[in-house]
Amino acid sequence: MSRFIDEQPTKRHYIDSLKEISAFEATKEPLRIISADEMTDACDLFLAGTRCHIPDRLPREKGDRRELGRKVEWNLPKDWKPRAEWKEHVQHALQILNQRTLDNRISELDEWPTWAELETDIHIAVRCSRQTVEFYHRGDLAHLPHKTDLFAVPTDFSKFLGSVIAGDIQPVWMWSVDAARTPKCYDGYSPRYQPLPS
Image (cartoon, rainbow, N blue to C red; front, side, top):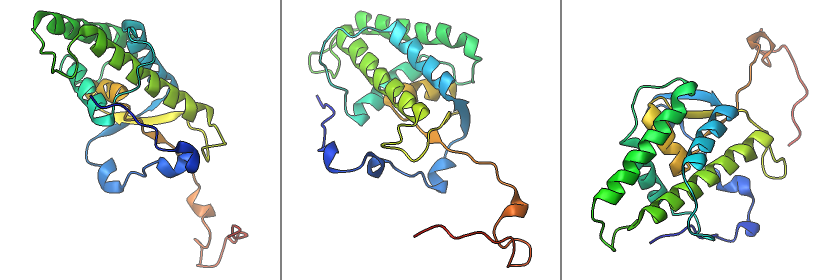
């Protein structure tokens, strides 16, 4: 059973642990941009529908959290649903997962031999995702260059909710620019700006 292990986070900057997504990775599957409020709502639906039965339990490793996400994905529709319907779909997916866990005889060697362990790990994983969304939405400038209200998520509704459990959070920073104000765009010379300090 693998658990998340803290690797001396005080010895390095948080921003150094972030992974920049390449153009290839960003275009492998369709993405949509949603707000921090929508991300928080998705997290809150899982947190309201689950409980933490095991105090002081640590988050699972990334692979295990992705497996938890897949277990829920299988019980969700692929087509994107309006926000007003999210609660119904999350509750239904959790009910199916609970029933399947109770109906099937589970080996003690299984990663999640009881519903209490499975439910706890989902709850803890989503709690981490919610904290992450808040962290980027607040824009803790001790650790981040900018705050953001935008997040990229899969367009497949089931994968979106699975990613909330897996902790696959993709904050997005977007700027609007006026092309005519780009340095040297007129004639290779103007407009001119002071260079940034190096």
